[in-house]
Image 1 (cartoon, one colour):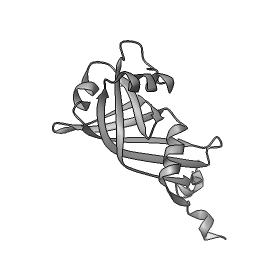
Image 2: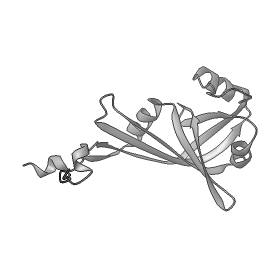
Image 3: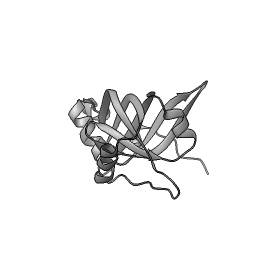
Length: 152
């Protein structure tokens, strides 16, 4: 038996591959410290010009993300066959965008809110660090030890 096949292959992703995967999806989680707690929200985004853009409305995220707040963003996905998964983590700073040209950049990139309501605030996340990995998903038989048949 080939023992190498039993272990999932993990590949660290370079910066260009990380961006390629980020451009392939539109959903991530954004995490940041808010006082003594950590907040974590799912958001839709678009990757453009080496940054991530999200839209939000007035409320918790906006209040916490003002003034170059340090954030972590994680996006994950898998290939169409469900055999290879990837994960990208971007750490950086979030700023509220007020420049008309940058707002137009977001509109041109196709960033639209998923939920109804006022989502007219644009936030740009500029990365300080980006990393990722890709790996073969282990077969379910590798997750759990074999069970003995039940004695009925």
